Length: 526
Image 1 (cartoon, helix red, strand yellow):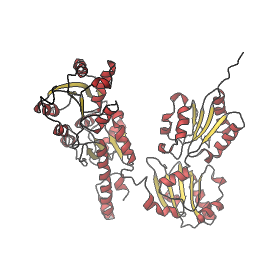
Image 2 (image 1 turned 90 degrees about the vertical axis):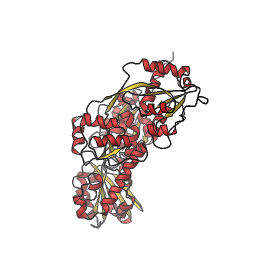
Image 3 (image 1 turned 135 degrees about the vertical axis):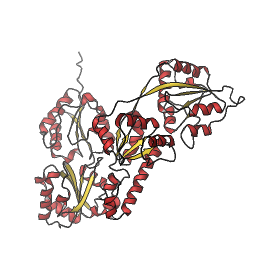
Image 4 (image 1 turned 180 degrees about the vertical axis):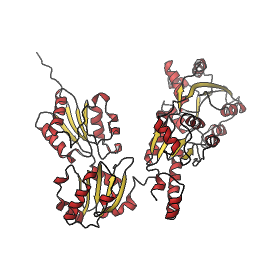
């Protein structure tokens, strides 16, 4: 009789890096995806846990300072013996924590299979994000217990090259005293960085004598950089010098629609806040769409024109209902009003025939859409699946060009529920530095559910129609890109922020203080 052997799980000690989710390694990501149980430190950002299956997250959290290494090791070993893959996710690098080293030693004494996945150390990672190089003989450490530090060795490191320490803010005074007692010159340059690699990272520069006072108000873990490298921040600082760094930007779109915009805003350093202003629902009477889908399959249309991602989604959902796919488009040509809509079409394996090369709007599409020719176009009908509140500009223009148009309601847009009270208050009180409007309806609906943005909020609009609506509602339009697209809208806002910064930098100090310009860009010069 063959006895079935119980599968044995694996244990992984995974370094999360200094905080920015983008610094998680591929191997660390794979370990988290495969995990059946995860124990994670409180210092690990919640965003890193998004890849972990909900059922895999352990109820108990341990921190290097609070959790006994033996207790953590027991949890991991027990999970592995029951056939599960267990992960301890720690900030920085696993071997940067004495407690984690002890956990690994405890696991190594058993027969459990384990691995240690390195992470970018907090001290070195944050120093790089702060624009402080660590040349020469470098010393970088993630410190848990200041009492274990060898200040003589640290002083030698400062004299020979550079020093970076990740420490608790409450230990800064003890480190200052230790460095001075070990002979470090009080005038040596020091940088202190809080929320390292995070959305609100902030670095203050001073000297060994004065850095404790300069860092007043910093809490939690901070990174201390000491030495000549700190002086190079003026030229090498990049994370905090991105055009929109620290700007809170209101994005009045659904999470699905806002993905590309929010990603671009984050790349420029902004903190996007997505607030849905509309909800998409099926048409009240689906018969129109049913006839349109049948007409597509039967060859009734020469063209189908998509004016939004929602329209693309509505047509494909109907196709799916009837067991159809891209092959059933046959000889129908596809036009899209803009790049985002075209990308949605390409996602289904079809390349659109026409996208406006200039202005991405109804007018831009009409400018490039050929008039109907009875010889060249034996089928003279166009399908236009749109929202129930769409304007008539496109349908009227196509009719003028000799085309028959089936203007079909593919979906309805209804006003979304109001956002939470704190967001409504922030909108009206100037808590957002900028707002990005991508259509007239986002203007109308945002004002309807949350009120008008404060006068100090920078208003960015995607095109002329949206600008007209914003003006009608009494808003001052500050930014409008040359072409109506989400990437160019974000690019235009970033350019505006750079111009604002340069303008403020050129002002005398007295004028800056009296300037009406608000937001993070202005605050840097006060």
